[in-house]
Length: 347
Image (cartoon, rainbow, N blue to C red):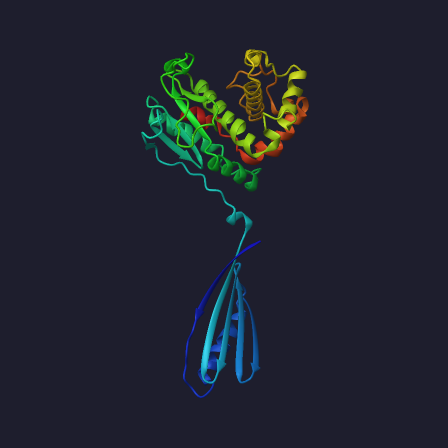
């Protein structure tokens, strides 16, 4: 239990020759309160060197009030001390907040952003404010209260995201709009001012696509940021750059069982980018495990060529290492967002 101590000192000076009849009546009134069912009163009287001390304690609704009266040579000093008991639930509550969309031209090509509980979501100029708000709302839905949430684990994740300046980027239509596949893209990779390394890929605001397609785009790339950056930085078992980490072993189990096909990423490895290869294969695998366990198989047309299972029961039975990670981390940090709510949001 946590305790918050509030001390209030009242000094009342009375010039008199001794205790009056009125003083006795006040003490009697305090004693009479002990008959109330919600209040417990303990009173002690001590006399030493001509000083009389009266201590009264009241307990009610988790608050203990101690009233100490000392009388000496006609002077009465009254001290009131309150101790308020807080539950762990109230003291550790995490507030999920979505900020206003801010326009700021000091972040290179990323001229606007919105903060959601420590995660900064940047957007390129062509992205609509409405779409930014929808992405922010989707992320906030993942951080709503839930019966399996561990507030300590969630706090660790949120702190690393904020302290390490983890960020999400939003672009318009796709990488071709900005010539990202060319040697000279039309926009910078990153916003700058500390927002440089701790990111992964873009969320794209599509035009004229189904709600399922847009929901799938947003969820996938938010999860890449959450697991491939936030989790990887805070939890050793999620470090994609450590081939002995639990998430890496879980991925290998899926590859060996022909459940997860990583052949489409082989070119990255062939080009000598081992770190990039490890990152993309692990973050894609993590995403597949999560959305399958969340019941989002219809959004992603599972099972299919890259990931060949489609239910949480199959994750549990076929991929025990991944399922253990899901139970120990995902369920304790993220809440499953309401799929119908998201479809309505992006329709």
